[in-house]
Length: 278
Image 1 (cartoon, one colour):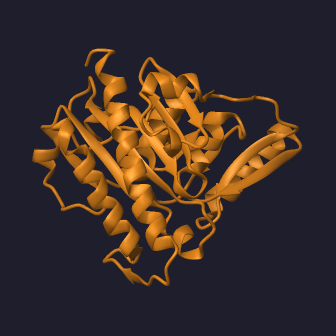
Image 2 (spheres, rainbow, N blue to C red):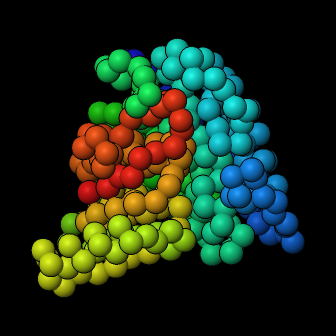
Image 3 (tube, rainbow, N blue to C red):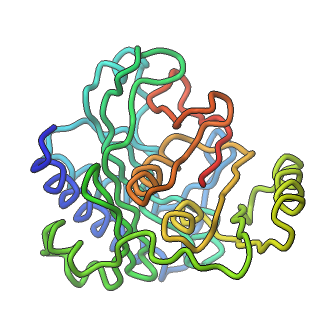
């Protein structure tokens, strides 16, 4: 893909994220209810409306969309794709239900990687947008173009990716922290996470803990507010791909603990291995 194509696709993803954000906030202000999916995770009207808005907005790109709220697709069909969108229309539905504002719209542009396709995956993220509707805050990145954080993002919806970048904060924003900072999930703790924290305490002495919902935890490392995010609990590919693209361009990395290499995507099963962002 040429360098000129990526920013245009980031534009499309940003517009899709803003459209999803509008739908989410419309539901957020009502007395909504939630249902339970087969995997016991919650689902609201906002998830469905955000999915529909994103699919409609991305249709003009001509690329297939793999979404948490979309239909189930076979492995052979998915792994034949050269490029596709990987989408979580509403990441942090539990946070949405709690009304704490810590939920995001995640849209990643994926491309076949240089390794053979197989059980462990076939693709990598080359661009991503991660939008926080309640704060009108957008994180975005594309390969070779850098990673950025923009406030009041939807008010500049007509801006191109280059224009948006020129008015945004380049990531990381800062590397100055009073103590080694670990970001951990508010909803998912595990003995492995606690053991990791203990190892970091032994190595660094005084440490600080940060807690955040949804894929915002990845962005805390990308922007320099945290040193590391260990994830010893289940996630799906659409939970991490957009953040992974942003982390890559901020000079950080998202490592699959099982393989010791960057996370691969479009696996036979769309469940991620445990990982560390640092």
